[in-house]
Image 1 (tube, rainbow, N blue to C red):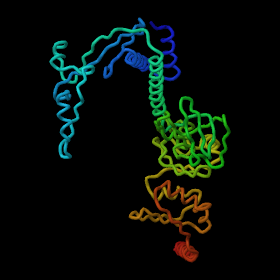
Image 2: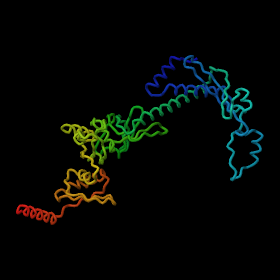
Image 3: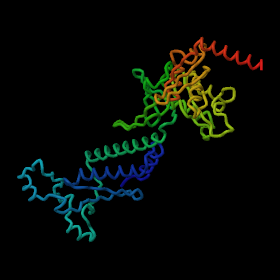
Length: 393
């Protein structure tokens, strides 16, 4: 007899704290009881199952036999004949198992017990209940329960974090090893690799950190979480928290180009003609974009309005530089952008960052060309002559 009060208390605690369903724990208890019974009183080859009643605290033990015939098992006399004949490479191997009276029952015998018995069915026989188990059997049962609880907890954790994949989660810095940061997420551990960190950021043990859950992995040691702060979607999710219009579907993030810790470009579009997408992202007095920038350690963010017209989109993506002309080569997916000489360095950016981010954002190869001085002067003369001709008329 078991202490039902303690068992029910433990089941409830495991369900609430670790998210393991009561049914899974009950399954583990029944498997442990069956293992202990077989270890102490069972026979070799015997299949033993246990049924535990939480209301009465009693355990019922059953022996299970599978219904077989000559087409599914090999009998002793046939086994000797088969062993004498070595199968050739051309002949298919016999995948039948050897007959064992402890786990098999012949179809004709099974039909005497159950009239509608068929091949592959299971016939159960009650076994004598036992309450006294040896130390080894009890230890084995304990190990089975622990193993099953761990497996059930792993499934529960995998499901919980699997649903949160692609979201922002919070954790505590556990330890740092060779630039990689291990983060305690509560029920699982996460890894923030060096390449997924924002350059220039430093972390202390015990510090709370906000990260993007990029991938959930199931390993032999448990569930492992891949984290990132450099992922472009981390930026998108931060804006989703700050900008209610994104969650409502009125504003949509179309594209992101990011060099973590330095600069990002984000293209947004409005699904409501009455809402300004860029203004929604910036917020009153820039409060929304400032909040996101502070979370990213002061990373500069350019917010531009997305356009279905490539010329317009490429022109806006090179902001803050002013563009004179955009010429497209659709075959090579290349854009030649003409800018005034004083805007060339601004369009290219420091170390080519501005044009590089614009290319990532738009998906076009961008070549910056300055306006030639001679052609600019010729243009000015031509335009002034046209003005004079109009004035004369």
